[in-house]
Image 1: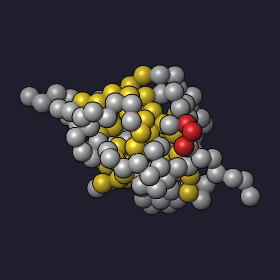
Image 2 (image 1 turned 30 degrees about the vertical axis):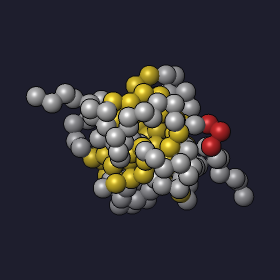
Image 3 (image 1 turned 90 degrees about the vertical axis):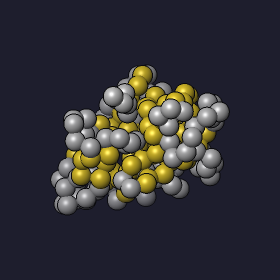
Length: 152
C-alpha cells in the first residue's frame, strides 16, 4: 500500500488573516500547493512568473482531490497564512535530488501547483527538504523576492 503524503503546512508559525474573496472558478488541488496572489482584489493560484505571493490559502483540507471556487467572483472566501516562516510540503515537477537550500519558481500543471525544479527566474520559494521517492519538497516563501502590490 502506498504511503499517504501530507501536503500543506508542515511546521513553523502561522499568521492567519481574515477571509479573502477568491477569483471565479479557480481550481485548488489538495495534492499540490496553495500559494496565492491577488488579482483584481481576489485570490488566485500563483504560478510561473508570479512574485506578488500573499501566502498559503487555507481551503480544501477534506478528502476531495480538488476544490473549485464559485463561478461568481468573490463568493467563495478563504483565510490565508501570510507567515514567511511557515514551511509547506508541495510536489515538485522533477526529481528534487540535491536541491536542499536552493531557490526555485512555482508552476501549475493540470491544476496542481508544484515547485518548478531547475527554474530560477523568480526564485520565489526556497527548498528546505526533499523526498526523491515521492518527488516532494518542503519549502518556504523566499522573502527577498516576494513583492508587495502597490496601492494606487
